[in-house]
Image 1: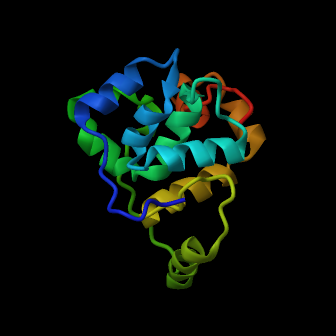
Image 2: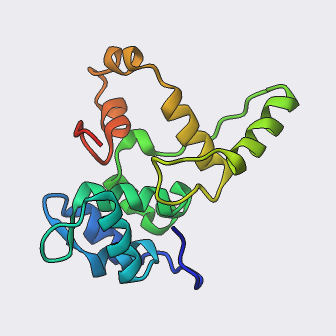
Amino acid sequence: MMAQLPRIPPTHDMLKRFLRDRQRSVPADEVAELLGWSRAEVIRQASMQGVLMRGSVLQWSTAAGWLLDSWPLRLLFDILGHDGTLLPHGLQLLPVQWELPAYLVHGLRIQSQLEELPHRVVRPTEFSDYLWDFLHRALDIDTAEHLKADPDFTAAYEFPYGGEDG
């Protein structure tokens, strides 16, 4: 789901306020502002997923998941600046330089455009966010279980659902 008009990212204050108050339901209007969608798009998507609550609100975790789907993680950190600590430490971006066979990089770039991603409400717009999604899904459940004692890993791995099914 993508808006027809150019989407406007959330402001620093809007994003900071949203990330600070995780124990609330979020009105559809606020979700729309965070995502750069129309209110109607939020209502439609929430209804299709069965997550729209009475009063046209969504759970914070649903809105946060859509936020991560809607904007590149790098952009969210740029907007937050020094308030980037409101996101789990394990989500902080780490530059990595790997030497990989060219066919793998080429293949994954093409796959990033072709792969159906039914678990997302918006396709990644940056290749690095596709790789984040791809590698997250590649983590073995046994590995995640082995790292349960690592709070930075667990907070980032489970964000924004915090262990909820979803």
